[in-house]
Length: 76
Image 1 (cartoon, rainbow, N blue to C red):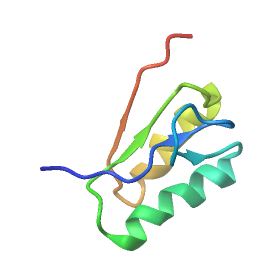
Image 2: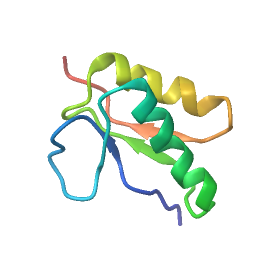
Image 3: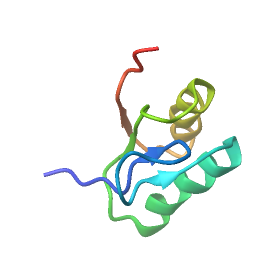
């Protein structure tokens, strides 16, 4: 069984308990949380409200420290 933490999402997330991010710094901070706790297998990235540049930034940033990511492919 795999476990993930709260999803990374843009401003005004669709679902409750998602991590709201609006900048690269917000994404970077969101990515450090699960790694520090060591309780999740990957971080999920949602594209409902996340700006395209931040959607692309998140997996690039997560790769360096070895954080696995999962995401929805944007429709736009």
